[in-house]
Image 1 (cartoon, helix red, strand yellow):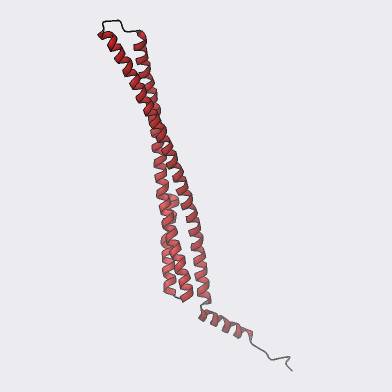
Image 2: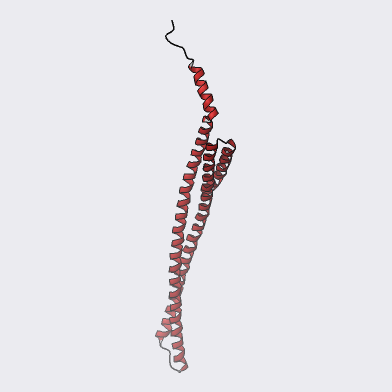
Length: 193
């Protein structure tokens, strides 16, 4: 005598799997997996976009500081030039009066000219540093834009993935995947470039 009614669990399991597939169980899992992968890419790209723009802003700020220092040097250069011109004008006055020019006037004029040379060199060095910082900042901003564009594609792709899950539309999911795949080269180029 049988102990109880025998239920074929294999057939029941197959029936449950068929119902889940009809309901889109495997499809929803694929959408969830692809969306999770795209979200990981988006998170990394967003972090890199933020880091590169922060570094670029820091370099631009440093370039501005260097420009201010260079401007100070050029103002100092002009002041020394004016002092030298005053010494030369004073010497010319002595000569015009037919009197011997004091040696201190020629020495001061020569000293101011030498100081101008050093100041000019320092100002040009500051301008060179400024240009280097600014160029590096521009390069980083270019990378930032690539990362930001990749983030935008990933975000739209993720939104389409959610829409595909809600509507159970394979066409929308494929659109989501295509947009996500379009973001990956931008993401990669930002790292390589």
